[in-house]
Picture 1 (tube, one colour):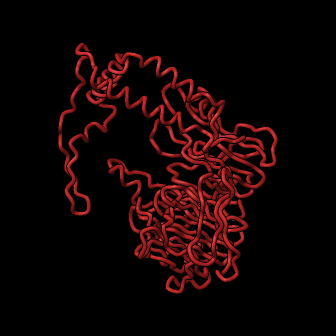
Picture 2 (cartoon, helix red, strand yellow):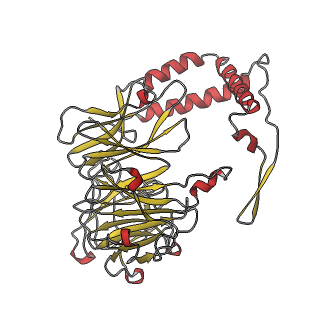
Picture 3 (cartoon, helix red, strand yellow):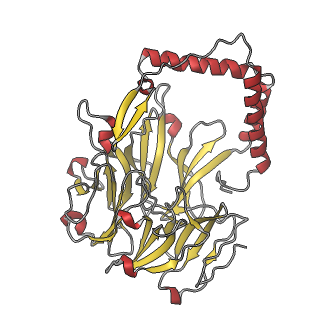
Length: 460
């Protein structure tokens, strides 16, 4: 059985025990710190003032960001030594830590981040006593697994390598892996062949996400700017560009398809993240422009040829329309909008003639909070049979199934069966967006209703 961290299989008692134990030890440490333990070092206040959007912001500890400074290194070591001394002085802590380790490592392995693509299941798997999860794959119909990416072997004693994200192609033949070292979050994307584990020669530096084209022959990836000497570190986010890479060709031949100043039809403000993608089964291409961490995005549709001609795009929504998520299925474009509502609603527009004012409301605002992560994002998942919707009701996660087509022709929607493992078909791992298509998960305690016609059935 595949187990995920969000599975209800894990006993709640363990969570309660762990929380209670941590609280007890924390209070005990505060009250019982021996006087023999030297006080921790105190950071000096050295104010640095910046102006952001006309607002003065004072940072008293900017100098602590320089982790190569001997002064900063000494301060960090002093803090760490003090913390270790306090923890080691707590009576019974060593036995408690050993008991917690036994419980936390009771399972042979933990499996997370499961995605399905073509005939394959991809997932991260962390074995007992391993610090990192590696990337595995097996056929969805069964059979043995094999490791695609061995994370512990990639790391060294002085450099820790992280798998920040991975994206299989729709046919499952290839998978991209975004790797960063030393906690830098400065990602380089690599491509691996699923059947053999072979790494393709092309890599993509400063990559903030990649998604395969509808025909799986090319890759759209978002690349940050290369910093000029002495430029502020934030400048790398000033004008990120979306490139198209044809598999098997040199990276030097990649073309820019989207970014600030590239298309006269598309406005890309500075420090915004543009996304470009094509969708299997649709004759349209989709562009999303997200202003940094703000989920409200501008949306454009056009023919796939617009990615090379840079003309022919139609604006569907502006930032002021408060659209936070989208899914394209054939000629239908589904949008999550928070315009005039706190919890969100779902709209459907004709991609050939996009008119937001004439959009059909397929899921009216209600007590359902549309959220698959950050509020309003990762909500819509366009699968082959229906649109799946992630939301919250009274704090409980739910997955709704909404058949495609206009409202009058839909049969009653229903929630997925309880305890269905999360399986995602990838569409886009770009910042703040996840245009995935799940086979879903409905919590065992959940019941789901879509207000108004059509009526949905509860989870059973």
